[in-house]
Length: 141
Image (cartoon, rainbow, N blue to C red):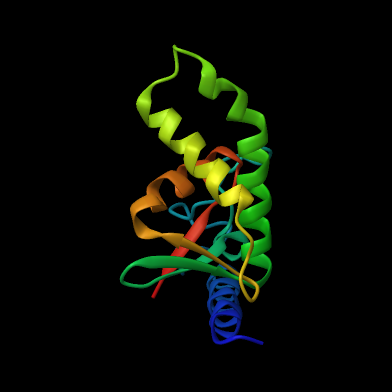
């Protein structure tokens, strides 16, 4: 297992521990938790912390490791295939065009050693793509 994959497991274990501890701010019944639903049956605001993808930020790049890399790569590929046809539209704004270009680029890229590496200059686009696909990310060093 790579160093990043080992760190990923540690981050997810800590997140799971926080989610299981009432009063931690991440427990299902804590009012401030991301997944808190005030009434039974309400839709949570976002994914619980222990279901987030984990990304590791370095000076020039951010990496996903192991299963997080696979999930992120699959979501980026799906986004690219759903949206690449709209690149020819004159009505698409520059921000969305850049985001789709980024998705197409990373969809074609291969994961290296089980890691997906994103240049920090494109991080916000990748984060927006993942969010559009219903994924949340925990970013750490």
